[in-house]
Length: 89
Image (cartoon, rainbow, N blue to C red; front, side, top):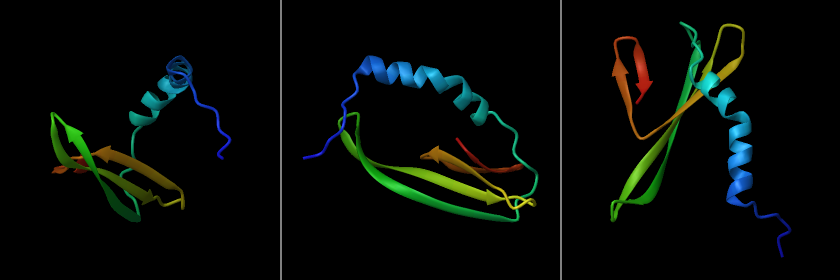
């Protein structure tokens, strides 16, 4: 019915390793001091962890900078306020 290819774990690892350094660079990039607008949302997933069913939240934040460009950030489960602003932990 659906025509798609199933990838092996080796193929998935190879694909992941091909751009892993770019992901780390993106995660460690510096953010701007000011965003004109920030949109925030979260999606709650029910997962099994340590033989218990719990809810986990993935938070997404999109910021619009002075140049009109959008930047996004996401984090799993915990957001907390710091003196520097809200951060994902």
